[in-house]
Length: 332
Ligand SMILES: Cc1cc2nc3c(=O)[nH]c(=O)nc-3n(C[C@H](O)[C@H](O)[C@H](O)COP(=O)(O)O)c2cc1C
Image (cartoon, rainbow, N blue to C red; front, side, top):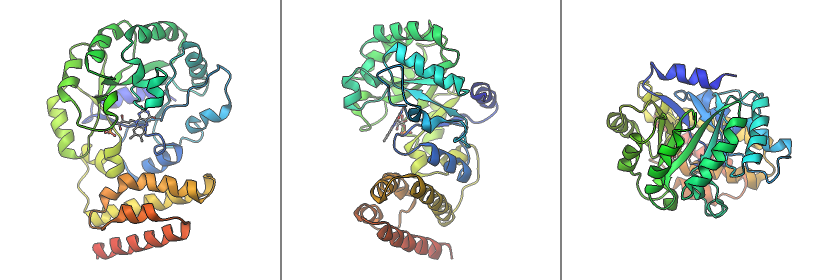
């Protein structure tokens, strides 16, 4: 597997290199495989973070999501959330044994429990700790390391102070979600904050945050002409055709889109049904997905409410049958 070199070769001659963002609870292996089979446009995917293990000795099952033999779709970058150099290095060594030559370090996650443990964006107010971590970890890595972060936890002075210090390390790239950790996923992205980062690093920056449609992407591409790489999460879950549109694919009429989305949905449902334990887990997964996908069915009144009310597989299937029928009618 040579994810790194493949990725960077493609970046030169396309409208941009597109990553599927990691979304814990959604973009795991089954989703990633099926998404890339049904929709085009993404060049690679970043896996949701592997839960940090307290000890260097951990069970094989924590790697289940990133086993290369199960990941049959997009090139994959595994992500770690550790703040302990020794445990990070042990996990990274296992990933290297699996063939990965690019590993991502998450110092952007805003979840309060994680921030409290000084992981994710909880590390951003402590640039010395980040630098010490990198000094300890980087000499032990065979794989290239990239970072995914935010503009800060409390204010963007945090990233502005950190970036010049990261120049000392041979990082592959730095992905910045242009929000603060304290915002969680609320409020707007801070494009001036992202622009301020550009002059402060020698590293390649990947833009991430609220790329929701082609117009937004074009505006961002015009505003940040030196950015070659982009990461899209929720925008692609709501409109799985967005990555292809960014790559120049012709627009598809909405009913046809809906038909294709339902084909993806049906494959996903049947694979989840095989792999997940019990209907509540299965329905929970589907409800989480519909929170985004509902945007592709604008004429369906109260669809998400109806889906969220469902408490059995039979009710769910009944609702999907109705949805499929009305999507078919719109195609006629
Ligand atoms: C439910 C949820 C789970 C997420 N899980 C992760 C994760 O595991 N690792 C990570 O780096 N980012 C994670 N993110 C952040 C996304 O990767 C991305 O940075 C963020 O959603 C902004 O991009 P978007 O506006 O294109 O979605 C998560 C976001 C959401 C909403």
